[in-house]
Amino acid sequence: MGTHNLILLFIHVVLFMAPGILAAGRRDVDENTNQHGDPHHPELFAAEFGAAPKRRNLKACVAVNQIDKCWRCKADWADNRQALADCALGFGKGTTGGKGGEIYEVTDPSDDDFTEPKEGTLRWGVTRDKPLWITFAKDMVINLKQELVINNDKTIDGRGAAVEICNGGGLSVYNVKNVIIHGIHIHDIQETPRW
Image 1 (cartoon, rainbow, N blue to C red):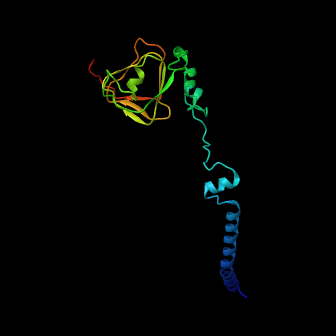
Image 2 (tube, rainbow, N blue to C red; image 1 turned 120 degrees about the vertical axis):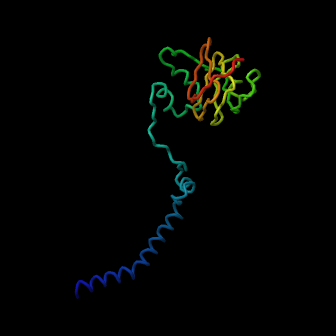
């Protein structure tokens, strides 16, 4: 029997046996899936093994400056936002911002009335006469009609949302104490009429 005939015999054997081998392998997979849950359906697999269906984020925490290193890698930063006030360095060390005050959430990016700002706006929060820790309910772009005069004991905390103050008035931090502004993108500020 020549080499040619051996190759043909091998091919015929493989072709003849392949469907049976593949069917048996599929049956084993089906039995395993029925017995242990399907790893391609995370909820079923998680229920079987008591694991969380969401994947863990295994990326390393990246903190590029000393203030970020103070808070960014802590898993509970969103629940303990006011710990940011303990991260101040240099001439700002000891600044408390709105620490100890209520958390006020900005829900409205408008700035229609600077003399009687409506609740839910950034202007309403910064003009209160009490300590406030100001956060943002969602990503927003705020176009200030007039400069934003910030009162004492305020923290404007943009962490967790993409917040821009642009194409309008800027921020005025003049003759006040304990103001922290963190995580806000401020750009393209224009001179606005004085009131």
